[in-house]
Image 1: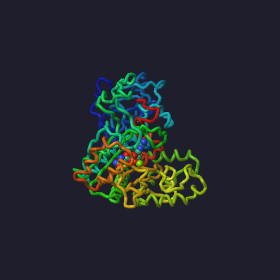
Image 2 (image 1 turned 120 degrees about the vertical axis):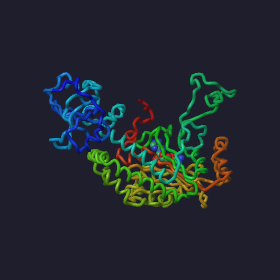
Image 3 (image 1 turned 30 degrees about the horizontal axis):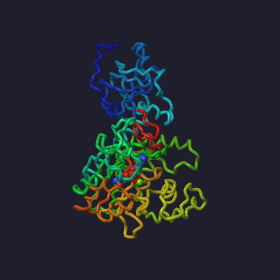
Image 4 (image 1 turned 90 degrees about the vertical axis):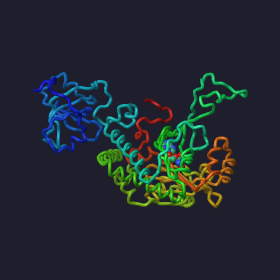
Length: 486
Ligand code: 4AD
Ligand code: MG
């Protein structure tokens, strides 16, 4: 037996590279976290470079008992040994351990993440550790791949990435309730003569909020660089406790000069298909694992709630089928005459033209009626934002939403109102303070151009690609009403 004093822990090789190695007989150093230690002999070691573990084989007679006892689930270790062809099933190579160094113990009495099935709810409570599970490490890796793919897609098309502000001085977007940003002493705020809080005394000399969308600001860049996108965190202070809503989420917002609503629908469809294909091409091992996880979870659901396709089938299905495009008006007709509407199965019955669609309606269209992604466009102007381009009919605006199976709305976008007077009239009609939007109106006064854009909710996209049912499980540290731990 070599004493640990003589065995050098060399340069670390990643597990993903070791598993691809065809040349055996070399001495390697591998570092990572113990997943399991079976029979005082087989260590399954994971370093996050891949969902696969490397097996490190220990001859326990050569090691001190006190050291072996410290090789527990969750412990971080460094191993030196010879890479050999594996005798066992399940892996091509393994490491015959010559020396082990414990980098960080994980007391099995106290370490919460044991090698057994934990519920997703329990794992949310230990979000600082859950990334050490197969499920969450796979999700983190897929998230990374999607971030990269988003930048690649737009870069390859000649779009420029623009950082829009996170603290905003305008609350005009109207996309949702906002979080205030202030340094005022909340117990003794300065007051105006009228007794209101005096925001002139605040850090920025005015009221400020966290942004709900980078759109209004990114439009300024669009009207100079033609094709741009922003990809940043956005914040909505709505009290929505659903499996699709976060108070802090990431949004990708492309904005294109000279695009009309049809060009925008084309881009949205191409973009979503590109991302799905990128995931299938680059995240295979993780998606195979997540596909299995999702199908195990499906089995616990009642038959009628189970989805017809598995995760991988659903991803391929999206690539193989064009999205259905219908107007809001056509959608209302379909919904009004649908079975669940006639049998009063919808929680919100569809009666009049002009009502906002609920997620049960969106999902009916996608999952039951068309059985594929749907793009709805030309919505009633009353239910959409002030900046959307007014159509000739005086009733609708050139808005579009992309609806996805299992998710509902994944993208919201529109052609923008580029005509100064029409926009100003709409702003006045809605009673939006013009003082917040003077610069936005100026864009229509000087060199205005037809332009369009949309927003993709990044976490909803990750939900679709990973098959996770709850949006809280596709972002490292979810922020939802009553929950900002970590
Ligand atoms: O439809 P929304 O509100 O659109 C906008 O904010 C526009 N300014 C976008 C644009 O045209 N540039 O949001 C866009 C997308 C939604 O389709 C949804 O996928 C996601 O953002 N989203 C949320 N995701 C998670 N949690 C929430 N609370 C979300 N609200 C919207
Ligand atoms: Mg929307």
